Length: 103
Image (cartoon, rainbow, N blue to C red):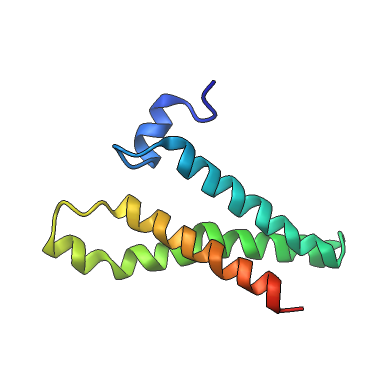
């Protein structure tokens, strides 16, 4: 059973790598973002969740892909989707460290 339809999977996942790996990274980021609800489930808690989701799923991966654009110009075989997911993994590790040490 596929979580993501095949037509969407062709667009968002890099080729030649398992789709489940990237799906699990996205799900892990979504679940990690819910950790902000430990302070409370009021409006401020949900705003923290949305902030974490934006940081992990959009801001840091986009910044990483933007920094990699000159490398794409130099080497046309570089897949920016891989760089985007690398940025998502770095954001996941950053959030993991943030949850561990920032109280």
